[in-house]
Image 1: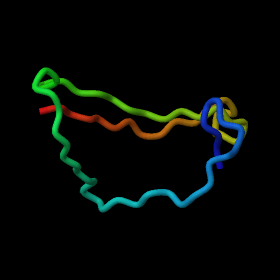
Image 2: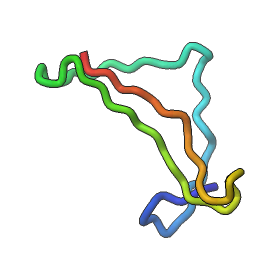
Image 3: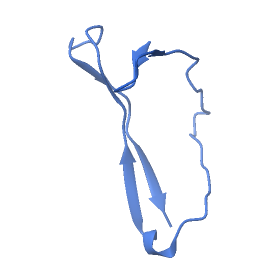
Length: 65
């Protein structure tokens, strides 16, 4: 269980489970974003983490084509 920054309540819920190959979603984006990408990663400050400071998720890349 973790907290979002600025959120007074803990996050409660089941983790998302994806197939081994991952997942893909398609959205219409402006032509000016073509060829760029965005890296997204969540970080949580927690004393329960292995290093007793913070825990991080795997990074995910969002590509605009």
